[in-house]
Length: 292
Image 1 (cartoon, rainbow, N blue to C red):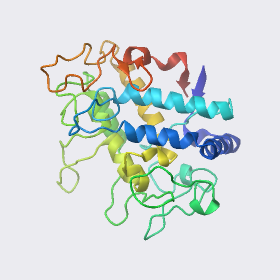
Image 2: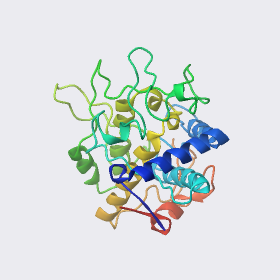
Image 3: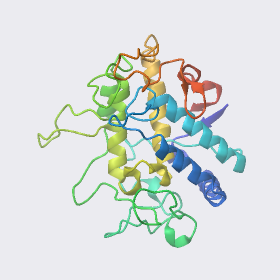
Image 4: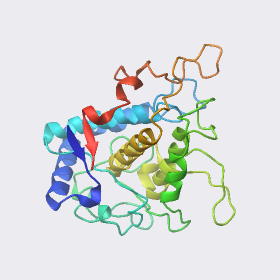
């Protein structure tokens, strides 16, 4: 078993080794396979197809398997590399250490949002964007969206989600108004911000919007911060499980064909594509890793 650390606690050497492993995966073409996989499995409510990755109860287990697969690919390059987590309730500024030149690089420049600093800047020749929805061969970001500011989720936002005693509920999609899964995934539209405007994006979704650029689309793993973000999402699932030991993954059994979501969402013991592993197999991460 290995340990996933808070990115702010990584040593200079650990950061370098992670960056080197990411760049090696990119050069091999393996990195872009993961980008394409996420794009392929980003299926919305409106699409008449099974939803394993987003807007669905299996949001947490699917991404746990996705990160595990990616982490194993990194470890084939460097056995000591793990995916750190980014606690965006604490490191909530473009000046935070993860955006430094020796780690992920900073925000994009005004105009085309192209990231110009750090190891993933297009100008360094190591990070061409090959799998994308929009035009452009370079990594883009717009941290905090200065022209129309958005803030990162707060400790209270997370605490409110962790209080939910039920994992998920019908109709098992982006419209669910309660339950831990959608409180964290963040499609909820309840509540008002400080300007008495509806809050459309929460927690996970709000982070994608705060980073901006390529993190906004289905191919968001094009930005390496994706992995650090989802490592923290995985940690939050673990914290919720500890806080509610008697709660279970729902739906427990497959939905009937008469249910509008029948065949579209995945129950506890149904195999998740593309791996064939079930949510039940993924409920306990401690056989593989722990969080520091």
